[in-house]
Length: 371
Image (cartoon, rainbow, N blue to C red; front, side):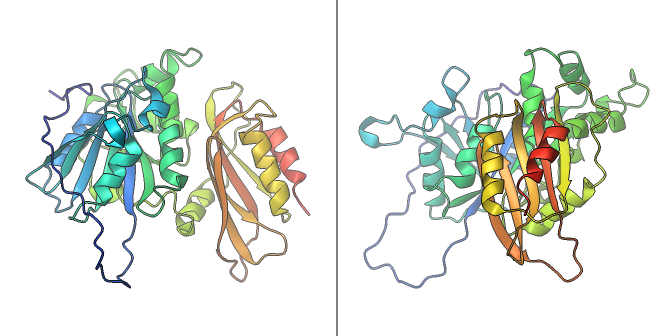
């Protein structure tokens, strides 16, 4: 039987293994690359703990730290980011496993827990963060992505959402217009990768719940997400680690995702549910006008749209650079990544994922950013 997702985390022992700065440390050492952080989310019972246990017990030869986030709805992310240890000290529980992985249980300051991890003597290959008890991963993603304290030590690699193939359609369709299962929508909307778990419990003649139909439901919410089918969350780690989904210099991945959405049409959708919308603009845009336009949408909610994720490529006036756009809720980043290639179609293309998206308004208002 598959472990329950609300099972108790493994017992931990305290280990004090933080590297202290040394006065005689040699200069000019190669700068260590940031450690990638993968956020794992998913509705209760989908298989998050199964995935975590699979990684913790696997013989993959990687030093992976798994953080079990114990703060729940009643505490909230804001409190979780605040150090509440006596005298400024952080009290954490850690356990080191036989396969080289590290498991820790975080009750208070996530930022400081991450800092402790990256300061350990043994170099980590990756960090996994299981968001137990959180409705959606957006606040964590914002902190990990562009937090000044952490930027040099860790980087947000991707958001992985585990969904239950047997119960997904019930969670989505039966409660489409209610707040009973908002997590199911949010977690898919923010995902870079969706693990479609328990596929052995679904067949094409099982009340019409074919896997292809489930994948269509997922892509109707988030057409940018990569879907991986699994049984008991047994997945090749290379498919979920080092995705570089938030790396501005990894523009080829973003460009490929946008090419896949070039024919996306939402004209047949008549409700205000969470979905994906792609808009294009052929003229070059003014960068400052584009920033103001995005801030009106993301910050001011000027047009009544609730944008969860946003990815895009911009052709900016007076520049030969490809600019990439990424946003998680109110946090966004626009950066130049490379030069346009000869013969490339210098088009602006932005993919929005959110609720109550209005294609007509987005197209019209983006047109005001052109030159």
